Length: 232
Ligand code: ADP
Ligand code: ADP
Picture 1 (cartoon, helix red, strand yellow):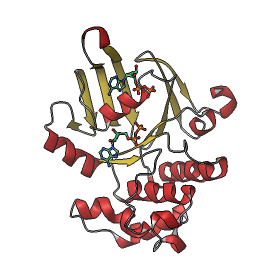
Picture 2 (spheres, helix red, strand yellow):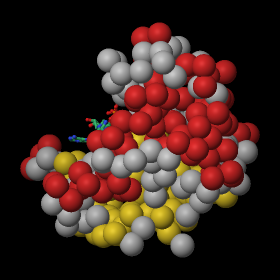
Picture 3 (cartoon, helix red, strand yellow):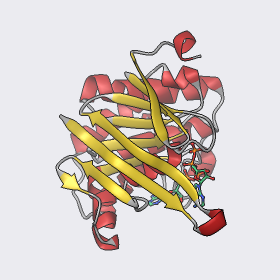
Picture 4 (cartoon, protein in one colour):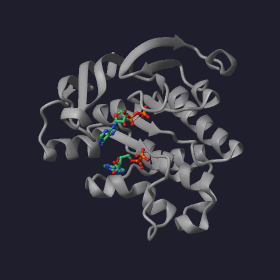
């Protein structure tokens, strides 16, 4: 069963001489409870594909589904609701609210959506990500790795259909990056979370179940059960 699906998706930026075709008919399925990495050269369309899947950007042609929801054709309001209720985001730059504590950041998507936090689940997520003793700290009082783990917990705590991670280890040293990747892996293995991650890093990709390779706006290869040396 697919947690997310792109069917013949095209995306064009600009027009005339400045026109860039960022996606040229991408079809891809993201199975529930699986961890997919998207790799490819700079400019190959990785971020564009993820933004289209996540309802952060419009497609020009084709269809996007998140679960049973047809994303394509939703209004801005519909897209906002979809992002709020169905997907979680992890960005390279953490994107935490600087004035809020770690706990408040983790619970923010739930409070925005006026959803009641499940305290037992919150505790489980916090313990899994190793943030129990950091909950009252503000982002500036946390290391980069800790901040990214707060972002991971914030994504997982809302039990989204899909977590989209855009270069989640791009700003981290390798030790902190490994902690984040292990947490993502555990979210899949222990909690059945579906994850789609864009990365340049073969070591990061080796934590996934599958790697999709993009080149020039198309899926050109696919690999299951990657290991770091095979991805290299
Ligand atoms: P990747 O994530 O693989 O580096 P992107 O999806 O960011 O690739 O970009 C794919 C192509 O679309 C590139 O040629 C890029 O320059 C272009 N592109 C991306 N975003 C925009 C934008 N907002 N306006 C114009 N061109 C863009
Ligand atoms: P980039 O990949 O270009 O360095 P980011 O990964 O930080 O930038 O963010 C990707 C895009 O998603 C940006 O255009 C940003 O405005 C948008 N964005 C970031 N956070 C959110 C959010 N919580 N909800 C909706 N859009 C967001």
